[in-house]
Length: 468
Image 1 (tube, one colour):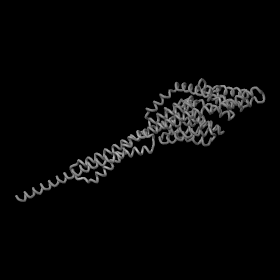
Image 2: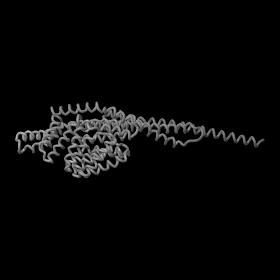
Image 3: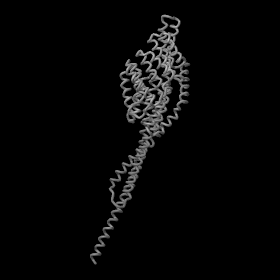
Image 4: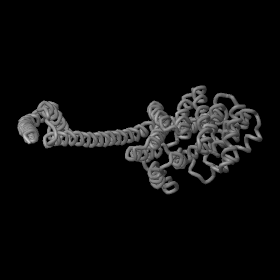
């Protein structure tokens, strides 16, 4: 219980700090009123900060807010971005299956918008999952597609994302030349548009590339640049990644003391945080270092290793609690959106029924009241049946929510209620039809009588003229 509370308190503190710095609600309001899709995408990219990526629960919370807003606005640009955020949040929590599900939705919607920057964002996020799974060829293919779409799109920030990630995944795939090329291209974009959000990761990746290439001085230079970029910022997870990478660099060149120093820093930066499970790799390095030289230190870091593994399991349980909460929030949002959509469709159908009924009634009245021509009673009977069906459908649409509520969605009771409505309508229809037929017969008689009188008058006039 204590660990769960710690996680929630940590999440709350991160959220407060993040909200103060970024003012998420203000940006969401700007997105809602913005008419231009490209401007919407520009505002959406402003939400993707390094603080944002250090707090997966916050990513999901913002995704849920954006999804709710997209349903109110009926805007698929916002909806695509919301699903992309949800997928990213679930991926950061380690739930790649759920993350993939939301990313597929994001891409499908982005394709409909034909906004290439938005599509590049969605593709970049889904590629992360394949990178995490070690499916590097698949990840590279999607990142390249993302980069192609980003280049054709208007948003400059999005162009950096796949380039930076291609540098990471090529390095993980031991293709250091391509890793260096894409990392340098990302750096050039960062300098050109003056957006430093990916500067830390770019420096870190270039440092790791030079470390693998055996360029130790250059590697240290870029590690120092990454440290400077991260200084004073709440990059708990990123700092662990930085110190672990430096420790691995020193391990590669057999500088054991420096390796141990940075491995200890990597552990210290995540101590007493929900990210303590990231101590696993540096603790393993320290255990290996002290295994043959210092029994006490070996035991100490073996214990840290075990604790970090336990923390990982505990963290997964805590994350599962959060995910279940988020999923229920999302389910409620989807239900509310579906209900809103159904209600809109019902109102629209009621309007169509009223329009159709109005046309039928006006046409029938015209036929009944017109004094210019004789109308067939069969035509009135036909219009009467059509009007009856429309009235029945109109009442069904109008009363359906009320009937569902009082019958508790019972099909049998619903059917009985509709039969009762029909039982009231049919006799009324017969009376109206009888009245309309009587009026029509009377009208037709008057028309015929008037025609006969006119004919007689014309004949009388002719006879008088003949006699004269």
